[in-house]
Length: 131
Image 1 (cartoon, one colour):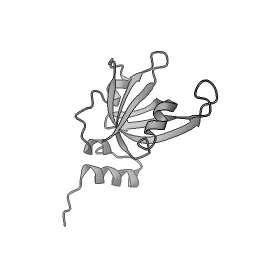
Image 2: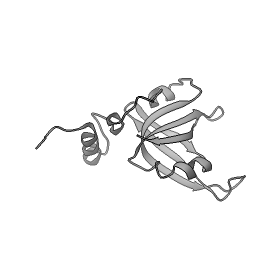
Image 3: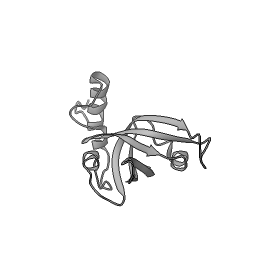
């Protein structure tokens, strides 16, 4: 029997026992070669046209749009995490939510492409891929 802990098993075990992963992040067990920014750098104001983050989806708040062209459709606000920190201000508008909601589930690790909202500073999701 192999008793070596993988990054994934260690992260999950720490999260279950302690409520958070201390020594590593679940994302660290994934292929992050496409990532061009981590959450800490994003929060510190790194400037890019398009951000690609490798993250674990920690929380999802789905709402129904009440006004405008997307009235009646669902959109979501995400809580994302990587080894560098947590991002609570992430918006998935209705078109992207309809395309990618199956990937944006708590505990799932994904590559998220997006942009910084110029007015509010929120991270706006444009594309999502499984990692």
